[in-house]
Length: 88
Image (cartoon, rainbow, N blue to C red; front, side):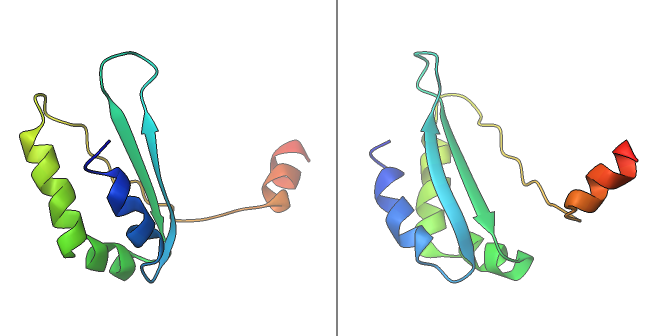
C-alpha cells in the first residue's frame, strides 16, 4: 500500500485516465487489487511507458508471489436497447 497509494493521485490526473482505484483483499493475505480505466488504448500505452508505472512494475518484481495481471478491454457498450432486445 505504501508504494502504490502515492501513485494513485498523479495517475488520476493523467490524460485519458477515467479512474484509478486500489482495493485491499478481504482476507488477511496482503493482496491488493489495482483497477485502472482508460479512455483509449493509446492513453493506456502511454501510462504503461511512464516512470510512474515503472515504479509499479518494480514493486511487482519484489512481490513474494507472482501477481495476476489482466488487461480487460470493452469492445462494445450497449444501453436500454440491449434490455429491449433480450426482453422483447
